[in-house]
Image (cartoon, rainbow, N blue to C red; front, side):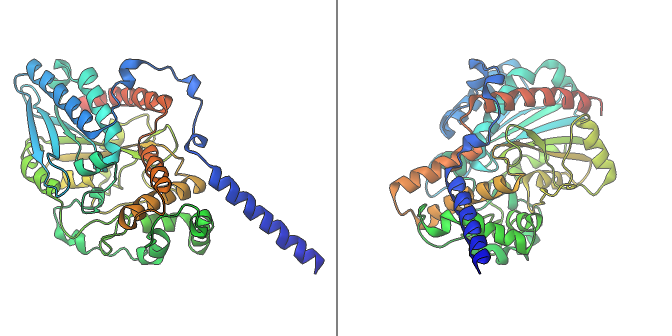
Length: 414
């Protein structure tokens, strides 16, 4: 009996220690050596802190390009809103010189709050990569801020609580998709009450999540949550009941441009998932072996996460796959650049990032127990997708420059 009591006490103390450690984790725990990365004002200057500033900077860059290249065009796709006026998806298109053979599509802001990094990269690309030599080899189509509501209001989803990267398809059957695993985790990830960070449920959230993992597996849990769902409008990763307005606009306005080119490469820019400070190549699986080989040739020398790791998950209705469906003929090469922020490829990082996401969605729908809870939740959410670390921001730019130089050289020869 005495031995049993000692064991129970030891387990209790262990749990208390885990709870204390969990509650004191900060985003800086998921970091690398900031001092080892050189910084410069020009590069960091690409990062802006509001949707309006980012869009204005993109429009200025677009205007400058139009002065250099007479055939460059800009498009403004107005996205209707009941909350904010003047929301737009902004587009720069420069046709390939002489013969339209290859097209690069560089898209950002599908998950609104991720648009800050995406916008910065797109403007760096305009400054550093768009040259006569590049345009002799390929056309360029840049899609800025696909989800302007989420971009402006620091949310991942649209005004209708729709995850735009689960909402895109040319087939309306998408919206009848059943995610069989989602109901099993619904209660865990969609609490229907005001956010109270001091509550028992929040302090012990990691234990509830670990219990779910033990009953299934981390990969099963990740897939059930992140795949996308079409039944619960207030829930996380809701894909909607129909295509959002900007999806329809892209189909109508940009589909004809895509169909002019026999070969199209899309790079869709995202932040959040994966190892902090690492640029992950993270496309949905490609069944066509010929297309898969072409993608691997474009990104030769870099590791592509095709789904052979335990941290992998697939999605339904993603934007990059959708663009390919707008050009039924020709060769379409999809790729997602994912810039990791919280080590979410690990169990601890995945649980922490899931908790941050849950709290933001819960607070949006049901409010907060206190103003301090609201401030902390929103700050943590923004930090997860738009880290304040100058070193993280510099590394993102440096790694992207290197990868783009290599991959676009390969794409030129395709």
